[in-house]
Amino acid sequence: MKTMRILMSVLALTYCGLLTAQTLTVEERNERIRERWNRSLVDNENYRFNKQPNKLLTTTVEGIKPGKALVVAMGQGRNALELARRGWEVTGFDLADKAVAYALEEADKEGLELNTQIESFETFDYGTEKWDLITWLYGGCLGVEDIAGTLKRALKPGGLFVFEFFHREAGIGMGRPNFGCEAGAVKELFMNEGGFEVLFYEEKEGMADYGMDTQKLIYMVLSKK
Image 1 (cartoon, rainbow, N blue to C red):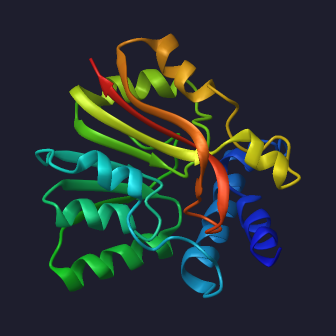
Image 2 (image 1 turned 180 degrees about the vertical axis):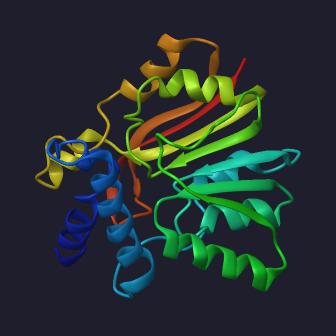
Image 3 (image 1 turned 120 degrees about the vertical axis):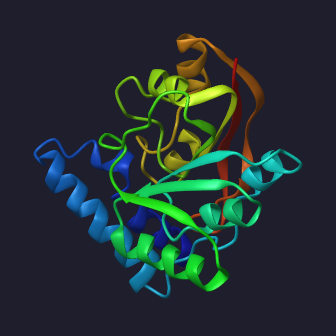
């Protein structure tokens, strides 16, 4: 019960949740996101999250030749650092500047190079045919205008997109009926856009990286055709 309360409290101010705060300007919303995730990921020692690399990501890149990777909502850098260890040229962005600073300190300790930016989903320049891999892990349900088209343009042909987040049923179980992604909605977003192949897709219970308890999650890996 304590874990559930912590999870509900912290995730209340994620990107998806903040979309409901219609009275906030984009700048005000982003400042709240920055403050909240700096507290959660850096200042609050009791906040429960997976400090190891995401399992879906490590499974996906196993045996793949490293290239250029973009880590969306990089946080403390657990996934960005792991990709750099595996030889990827990594760029990551996040609004939580303290968390990004922590990632850079860890990279320096290990002799790794990370390119980082303090940006939001909307303001980051994803580029054109720039990335061999883009990760969107616990960054919400892709609630950004034309995000599927943006990601398709940003990926190189054959580039991979790795996604994981809470299912809507998890949100309902938390007493938050608008939280989490509806069944099939994320995959449909990319199928409607076209130009992607689904390499892996599951909606099932698993250990959530944030909250560290069992929740229904959505797992997806796509390749750009």
